Length: 326
Image (cartoon, rainbow, N blue to C red; front, side):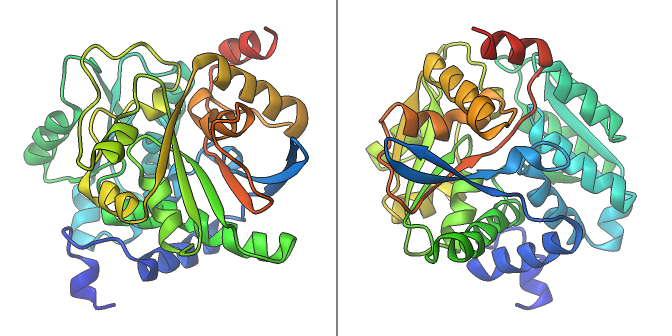
């Protein structure tokens, strides 16, 4: 891959790019575990990305994107927008690389995510999720400072970085089960994680899972073209998956691979969080539990080669305790 192509912001994510991201991630982070879980007599495999240093898979895309910045771009800094997990991934990478980071976060983001992003050295600017455009705010800040905008999913580097999860899944499944996965069930906001892992698992079917009322990827795939979240979407605890509009970069890959998509309820998510805690000893945030919720509810069908993503564990302690104790 030529340097010119690497620096092209309009390029498409590729399997080669995912492997390059995985090689970079491997140098700084150990693999997260792939944990077996028996459900209705079948063993599914749970990729525990909630055990990353920032508590979510977003550390992968942040590291891949920022390590590919030029010297001049690093000096100008970065601007990102996120409800919290991408924010922490970018902030973590920026801190390690000595890059100034400004993160635009919704005012109603979980306190743990807001505070953790600040602790990583980023400047946090809050906005009203339903009244303001985070993309516009980021563009204005970048225009003023010359910083590079780092989107949460609509970016080839971010997709490739998240896809490094899929490289690990493939290696671990072959090592632990003797075969690559044939079914991937992924938590979905903008679709960056699902798209990335698909690029390096060409044999696998894919099911993407969203919270009810925020299932724009589901409706887009069913209709054959991108549609936004419907007006007045309901409140959801899955803050990490509140994407108002997906992008062609992710949608086109998922559509081409005939991705299945479904939505889960609040009750199903809470049940999945409890199961993850009781049987896997994992702390999982609501948005990180939707793939497991899809399997446990029977909405997604499991094979003995099914891998699900447990994508994040950044939940306020009081809220987690209330859900687990219910």
